[in-house]
Image 1 (cartoon, helix red, strand yellow):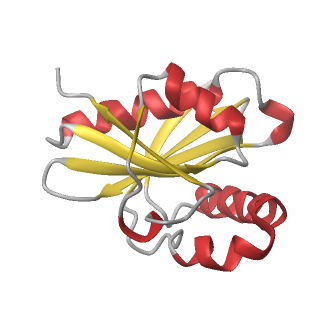
Image 2: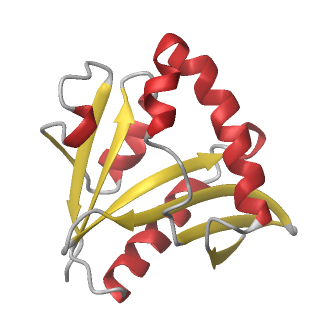
Image 3: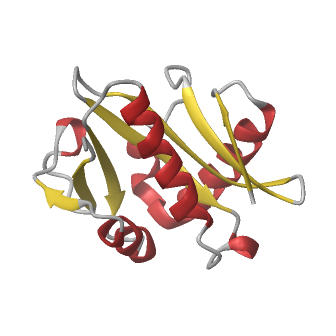
Length: 150
């Protein structure tokens, strides 16, 4: 597996985001329009793309949340490649990049409808926090935090 740091304009990132959005439209059902409002990529400048044999198979991104925190966004692995620790590698690279940029922690929002994502983040050291921002009061949202400053 190879990891590439890029931005949201990279064609492989755009292609995998489209696949992610198709999957989330099914998972989120009637709630998809709400969540998609907050998943635009125009303000994402730090992405990681995972490749296996030159095929893009996974993505993740970080964007500035506040002066000390980056928000993890757009984590996705193609279904045929799940179970190979690709998401773990992408997340670890995003956290490394976060530190290199001078930030101290990562936050994220995931869904009760994505139990494998919740397990990934918990195994990676994220802890549940009160829902923040637009996710306050959203019963299917789970917000998490990891302090990564060494």
